[in-house]
Length: 296
Length: 292
Image (cartoon, rainbow over all chains, first blue to last red; front, side):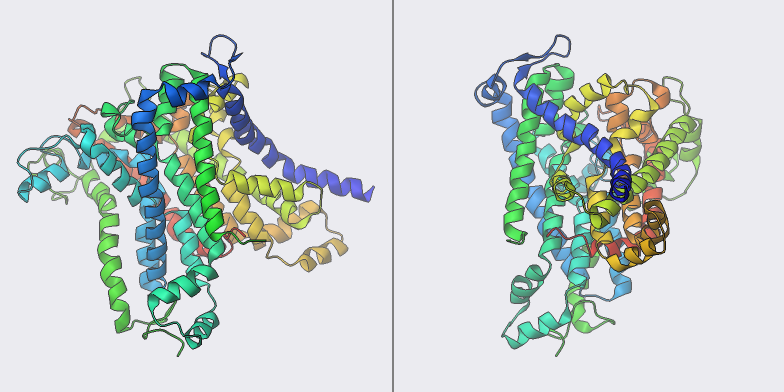
């Protein structure tokens, strides 16, 4: 009787979370996997077509191979590791200064991530606006760098760079906070032991003491960085105001799957792209796990 | 020698050797803060300064006109701005409170109870830290359509309630509470609900503060729900409304600029205030954020 009662309350405490977790996280992932093996246009019932969606992605989707995949990899490699290394360096530097200035600077550096993403696209569209009243254009013309305004957000050459800058700007989020507290919580005695063992400069100190002592936070930060990077896909469409983005210059996997899913209603094909995207996230996180995870 | 080259981690006062860090951190912070300062400045510009050529970064004659315009503005479909704000506030409050409740409840049993699937559930949750909602918009859409949530108020709330990061942080934090404390309460005759309310909740306040911030930022800034799952203009949120203000993308965004900046400011301020109030608690939780 006692055991039963105990189990009942455990179930009661766990049930709400599990319910929402399964419904809105597990089921969509499973459904994506299922749909990726079928043809589905949102009107007729899905029909099983085996691997042909995946085959099409690789062999027939010129846009995917030519633009979307290289864009996504370029974006992910710059924003992911770039943002991550920057977060770590900033966290490390902040840890070297006293509490009050640290808190103020940390707040400033963290603040962009509070509203990053689509919500801030409004501000960026004003700054990068294509006519002469656009702030960046005006600044560059005044400085004599440019002679006529550039349509930053509509130009294939600039959109990608702007997307990366904007995303990096907003990437000092939870991972950054975790790493900051990680650096601050390293036991001082470990450093002293390190000096006795012959650590000679700052760089060695970071490699041999700081990073190994905060591996768990480094891993948490890395997972957050990977997820944040792949989630940021919407920014290109928000900035340029169109899906597909001008000449596919800012097209990432997230945009590509929305293009197929919500614009062309090829849900099965879009689902195959979803699955590939989830696999990418998984692989990148696994690499982080290899680097920082504790081996059992 | 507790330090290297005169500086150390978490110093208590200023030292000359810290200068090099300031030299890097301060210019960078200025750059990071610029767009935010820009919103503040832009939101208070009168119309002639918004159109001014060459454009000026800082406002010269600040005015509240943009906010007044915003308040009087009704969207093309005739929905007043107060309606969007009301939706946003209701949705945000509900989601934050419910997320805190269900995450701490689950965190408590996952940390302090023994049952068969305990480890598996937590491992799946850790795996779900990598979950990218944007990747599964389509199956999610189909699912929401099938359970009849499309175009309802609840669609803003339900999909956001399970937050793997939240559960993860709270569980790690509850792990720090000694088991003896809970055993002692049990001997005194407390049941699970009493233990949860009287011991767990007060002790995990820092973790709760962190979930509050994370889930607040997620809901308050959420545009996707309004764009994808809601057609009824009356049920859309302020974040969505704001994104439509500057949606004129043909290059001339000047017309809606003042209002857009005012709206951006209204979006940003609550984030900032909540973070400033809760930041020390957040840092406290983050010390336990490591994935082992």
